[in-house]
Length: 89
Image (cartoon, rainbow, N blue to C red):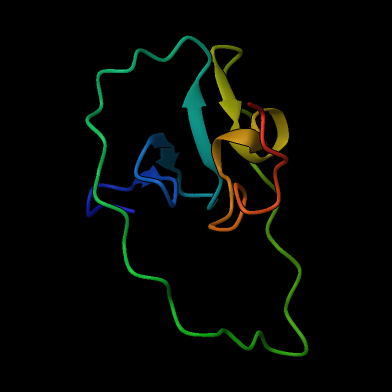
């Protein structure tokens, strides 16, 4: 994620932006005018808290905007995505 809330995948490709509801949003017809970024180093292991509060209700989004995690989760692959794919040759 950049300083102006743009979100990039672990491979450096543009995914969308982070809104104030902490959702990753993207225009439905997004142009690929965002340059690829250098992927960051792998983070340390994360231990989430045992109890977490319920999230706030989410605001409506316009029809021209999509929630990436709901409609395009393929834009956010994990670092080991290609390690488990069969060879396509």
